[in-house]
Amino acid sequence: MHVLAAVVTAGHPRTRPDHVLADRAYSSRKIRVYLRRRQIPHTIPEKRDQAGHRLRRGSAGGRPPGFDRERYKRRHKIECRIGLLKQARGVATKYDKLAVRYEATVLLALIRQSL
Image: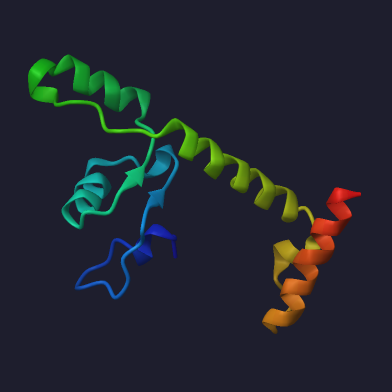
């Protein structure tokens, strides 16, 4: 199940995120319209082909979506750190059933990376 599937669901969602940060894979019009309708601020970069289609339509294409570059840079840093954490087998496979043990595995991986 995708993370965004928890946000984009049928029926009335139980939670409302403060802000959605996503990569280009989630830049579809359907997702943007849904987030705007629920008044959820989002930072999603526009795909090049979508920008081209919008520009070709001229004034009917609308304006480009807002994009906070600094917020997206912070998201990218976190995603890279998670990628480094997944190099530790225990973190990537999630064999530990107890949250306490999994948290300890993550902490050990972080300590190992900082050395």
